[in-house]
Image (cartoon, rainbow over all chains, first blue to last red; front, side):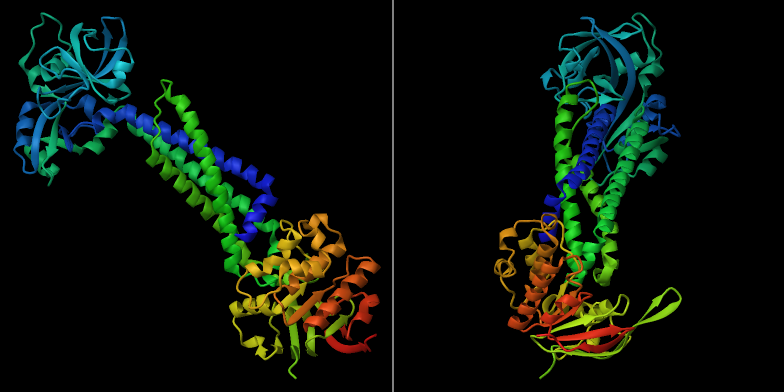
Length: 375
Length: 227
């Protein structure tokens, strides 16, 4: 790196300008990564934390709105429980509601209906587990929004009252609203909009959103289970797409990230193309003096690698600092090391690829042009 | 004694548009170690082509080139690059220095390309060409003559057998021209380097051991070398 090191120092203004561009791209990558993770957390962290391998919905239900449209009967739960490869199967209810606490905190909630003491019934970090009807255990983010143990949630418009008995340790959100776990019959009444004093039809207590299935290691045969129970199954990961807005948000961000990768490769490639063209005469002299193609290509690629790594590191540093500031706002934003490392790794790799495409020109420089009046 | 550089019946034909141009026409040349040969002639006579063929930058269309006992025609491109690195020194017009490097780094540069058997000490060499006081200066901080001196040091650092010099005084005034060619002659004589210098400048020919003239690709004896 004899030449590269000195070129970097000598043309520091030019390289700094390029470095700023790469650092800004890296900064944007970090912010997009934080936004992606934040949106995923906001959209499906409640689902991610369900201890299930698959969910069985109503047969033929639309896959992008399965949670809001699916209705399955408790019979399907029994059918699924008997399937080979299934450790446990339980009814699962999911519906979005508007609520207000008795301390006048307005909050939208995703009510998750679960069986008391079942494998879906969560262990709160604060307060008690669900013990009966009319109780809720809520997400840590609901607590941050002002909901506390002992509060009474009034579901609108039916006026159903639910007492908060526990707070979960982590964020549990679905479709950008906080999750409240309630006992199944409480969920069924809320879903049906039952008001105090209403006569409730028996079918209300037979209907749930889906069958939550936990495999026993070998895993259930989803197609066979669906045939037996008359359902349409999705793995837990597949079910994320049924969360409101999830696919649109993630695909939009992935598209932007994809464009950023392409732009970074093109920008770095264009920069090194111009640099290589400007250095054509110098490269001819170096080749005439006995520098091999490998030496020149290696030197240029190390130069680009150094530029990309240092600029990306600066961009990541700025991104993390910006992320810390954004994290204190309501914006869905969460920084995680793995997606940032992957994004920056790709940025550097594609940048080097762009530089490599430019540096190929070095192999075509004729050392003969170093002689005579060619320069 | 084997000549350090020998060209036998070398012809070089290249295309200029649709036309074939004979740049070198059955050229014979033998240069001994420690000898400085000047080649003069009008522009386009084939002087630079002669350096290109002698320095393994261009293969001849016919004929053979030998560096010592090594026939260049037998070597693959990789070996020719290694041969240039180890045994051939080039001095270009205006020095052709790398803008990012200091004078000392310019001289060290050829040693970074790969293994060199018995290199000269770059700092010592820089002092020998009278440029030690500008060791930390970059090309844009040097005069034309100083750039040429650094270029000469760069060409000599690998202790080459052959030194090929392309119009070294093209951008220099009379006094600087004399100093630069005097330096070249001294180095060639003291270090046993076979040197070929292409030039338009007849005022510096008295430093050379032989003067040849190139006319339309043919090499002829021009005049006896001046003392």
